[in-house]
Image (tube, rainbow over all chains, first blue to last red; front, side):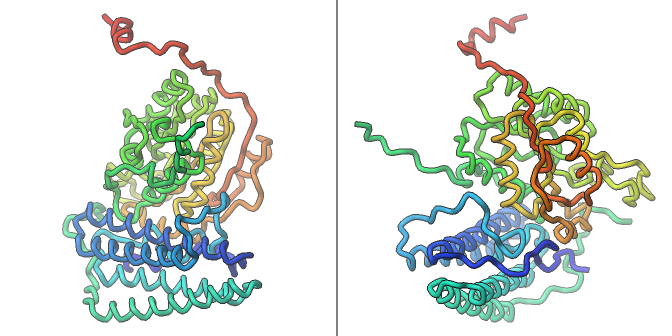
Length: 186
Length: 278
């Protein structure tokens, strides 16, 4: 079994997201989603650098930069000169975390670029589904329209990550074997 | 007219230090660190007015990863150091942090009496049911049947139940959180900081190196179906009968915190040297 499981929400995942009441509220949520992804990818990059897995660290750093650019795009589209004020209560994500955020435990110190891209692919697919659900449940036309645009963007990201995956080497089955492991099993 | 601009709101990034954690990639403690910084941003207390005190273990490295004042103390004694600090400097926000071995075994007696004294501290335990730093020995919260090379067939010893012990010992705020829910955990930590008295927050924080099966915790963790109670008997019944993955504030009481009094004239270093001269 791979030590890097597929990212997934919790058992307590509610079936549908709440429909934001205004465009500002929805775009603030979309911005927060991107920023949470930036934070998680940055944490992953730091962890990989510390464990001398520099190739994957650079990849996570790049992913953080991409998500950061998406967050800036949201600010620009909304004409916001500073980050939106977020509500005191947490957003109601379909799971414990924002859909584009990979789970904290989806990494391994020996993981390879292929694993990092699989993780990113799962995150982009979750984001695409999330915006699709907003399109479905939105009651405000401006929210529905913006969600449709963001869903299309996420669909593009899914395609880009899939194309990227084609360019990297698929790991050997024994990629996680460590001749000097932290955990001894015999 | 006051032309000094109001200070910008503090964000989670303001509470992170430049040091990169050396925890294993995938460790739940990364997420807890993120929750602590988010919680401090929620309460908007400046980093120089916060002290993070810890003991020994993987999770006890956390003070170095914040921009707050920190004290990385001796094994199991974090609560003793934190208590002394809070009593001497009550104006500071004191967060004590560590793991299940440090807090419930080596520091078990301090845990009981810190709950009992009810000093205004927030105690965060990152519980992974194992001694990770020393390579995987059973800890007080390890399941009795956890079979590994160091305890073949399991220890056979009943697991320590920190939440009910905290409640019975007098903690004023008792909560369980999950590292996989960093935003919810931040809310709980912020509530613990704001609550006067001793706030105990048990955070299920998986060790993916020595307990890889704990990755499944994210499938089990779920929000508590009801809000906090101020009735200790009701809280005890809930804590004793839940499935161990019930996330939220489980008890929020109104016990008066241990009284502290700020020194009117803080001693200078020279005066302190004189006082402690042998």
